[in-house]
Image (cartoon, rainbow, N blue to C red; front, side, top):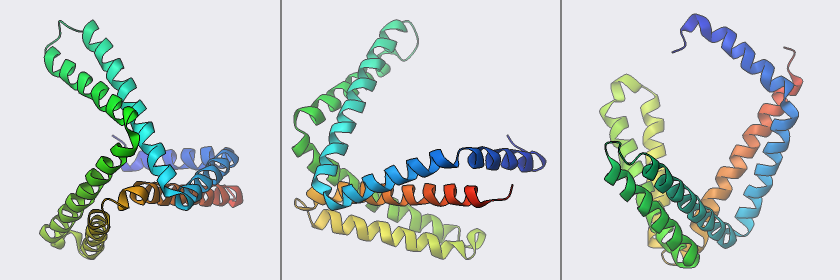
Length: 192
């Protein structure tokens, strides 16, 4: 754990590292922003790409899990590990076998997630409003935005499945890329 007196040297080291590598941050930021814009322009393609990517992630991690579980078959929890790895392989195969149908399922899960996240955020903010002071209102707003997104996604089904994942991934990539571009430019222009 980093103590407060060790934080300043750590922050200085981070600042130096960012300044030395500002071009890499800039290039990564530009690439992420371009991918974000592309996802926003063609959200159905981005939704399909995310589904296929998740399918491969599940499949590869499941196969890896099966191998590791077999090697460690004498360890406690073998059957739970085996079931978990097998489920990952199964989920990956389903996502890759029928990616277009999987986009609809992922969109439903995404809508449910935003609804649960919004309610949980609002409840947290309301139950801790004294400790959070002015930040509680920002958490409530964030929770309301999550619920609105959930409402738009769920009530728009099945047509929202075409755009929801792609638009949300596009927004995330665009803002992430813009942040990296900002960090790179600030580091380039800094005096330290």
